[in-house]
Image 1 (cartoon, rainbow, N blue to C red):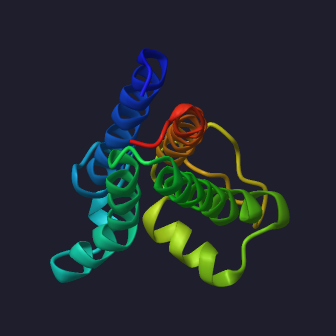
Image 2: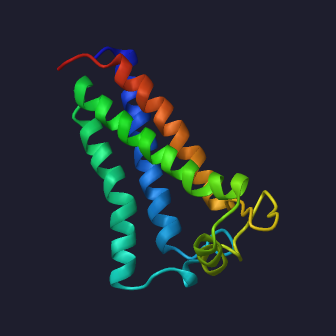
Length: 154
């Protein structure tokens, strides 16, 4: 890798680590009112929730860390899928209205967390912790894409 490619690689890897660290922090550490872990799962369910969210990101990071361009593109696709999933989960209910299942889940898990946007009936906004998560996921996706585009086969 060239010096420029290595610099992009390091920045992307640091962002990927930060994304996973932030995701795990908001899942486990009580930072109320930023998050509300008291409403979240406990014990085995918490482990499953963490695994479902963090393991795909860790797998993407491991694929990227190999430093092979072809595998790096798989990592980019995975980060893009994660970012798009975040948008679908949070922005669809905000713009189009949430179904009753999401309204109930939202009321239990996110009703007491910090919000930047206001709710309008069944249009429930993403809370601040998820806005930051989405922003970090977007920046990670962009920088990872830039790093992979500059990679050379080892």
